[in-house]
Length: 430
Ligand code: GDP
Image (tube, rainbow, N blue to C red; front, top):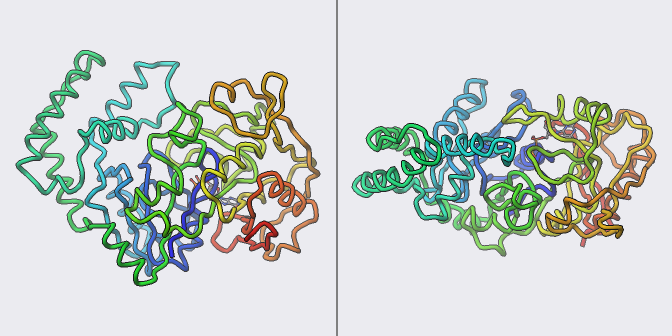
């Protein structure tokens, strides 16, 4: 049984928490896209962790954590991350890395930085972790697969060839020092030593696991609105954030994904540039940012303050649809307990017309939010276990949003911990 845990919005919806929670009853957790450019924050019995590359199931001793072929694999970052959790008394996790995953090279990180410098104020707000140059090279067919580390002859030739191409950019576009192929080859030899114990034919492993009836979680990074095709292009990430891509990025048949758990946060936040219709500013934003998430809405990887906004029904309905949602996990609801009234974006006004359909980017840039104010519940809902025990206005907030987005909210998260979850029956659940 394969289930995907993905985001409906701009990321940071709380996928890490939901995956960590669901991993208790799973055997295998697979990262299928993205790289160390975003992070998941997880709070459990070992403490609070920010993971960037490792799947969120890594804290259980019964799970296998898999880095799928779709991931941008930064080998030193993966190693640091393994060490950092083991140093904090988490048992050494069982980790497998796909032999078809490609490697984030040191020059990808440099090129990312140089390009942001070159673009100055017009930058995309990249996290400068090399992800865009990495995926560009993958599709330009000059990327390095993990498997290629084990074919010395070809590796040497390819390193020389790729350095020639990169050095044109280094010298003429960026005016920076050129790459040394010998040095790069040495780095790749180190990478080989580091990664060798974990390398695996992941698609065969998962094929067998599916046949054996194992429970597999596919863990997405970011959310629908950052998808390169369906998101707010060009302010998107470089790999698909959709559950459908889980099949490709893990190497399994698409029809094996039986459940898609789409995580939606009870308000909005975004990092990086791009249209954000329900965005709020000033003191109102600062207060939500300070109270948000677990210890404030600041990037898990970058520490950057996140942009804040009210819940966006238009974006979330679209986000859930593109994911193929079977269940919505509605998170961080506890944070809204301080508000007298809670605005919710129920439509976009574009050129004098109101729509509830999420538009293409140039139209999105012109959209202003149509807000509806719902009454707040003015109390702390943490610790509540049963849906009926939630304050009436809180239930009304959930039910209103479910009606707007049209997908069943079957889980409500009222705290960052594994146990902070309320299961809910939904009439929309088929
Ligand atoms: P992800 O990238 O989707 O995994 O999201 P992040 O981990 O970056 O951000 C979610 C933040 O919200 C983290 O700090 C979580 O610990 C926290 N969080 C998740 N669920 C809840 C919740 O229900 N309530 C509160 N207060 N915090 C939560």
